[in-house]
Amino acid sequence: MPKNSLPFVLTLLLAACGGPVDRSGLTSELLETDRAFAARSLEAGAARAFEEFLAEDALQLPDDRPPVEGREAIVAALDALGGEWVLEWEPQTARVGDGGRMGWTWGTWVLRPAAGDAEPSFGKYLNVWQRGRDGRWRVLVDMGNGSPAPPEPEAEPDADTQASD
Image 1: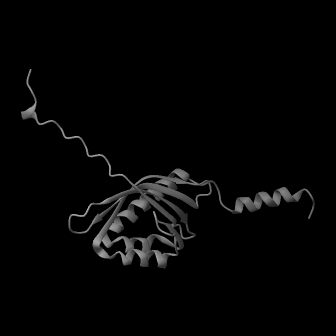
Image 2 (image 1 turned 90 degrees about the vertical axis):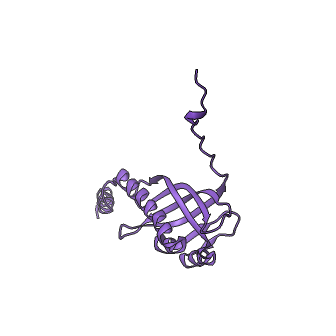
Image 3 (image 1 turned 180 degrees about the vertical axis):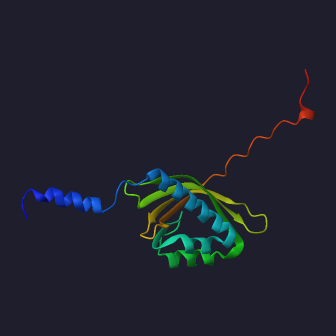
């Protein structure tokens, strides 16, 4: 091979890896995937949602507990909580890396009792996602920690109680 052909071969190899990535389209897709994940948690429960959306080799970094490795172990830990709690979350932002295969989302969550009057827990999360060869996004790392309860919205003044001038 002539010395001058190495740059040409490298250029061909890079071109074979794919063209430019539409990051804005992938970012919207990732945010919608996290929203579908959250909706699935409300429909079928957190354990089933995590079972469907986690990568097989996922890692969970829960607040104040040791890491949990692997989809199977994460789902088992969620199943152990039973159906006494409902986990819901609201994705806020998504970002996708330059290559289009990795991304992250963050948002806020609330863990509510399924019945009774126990106080809910609040927090925030960060999920690292990987886009598979099949084009499907799966959670590779799930991290969360607690937050104070959000402030109560201020009540609108009642028209009957407002002083007239």
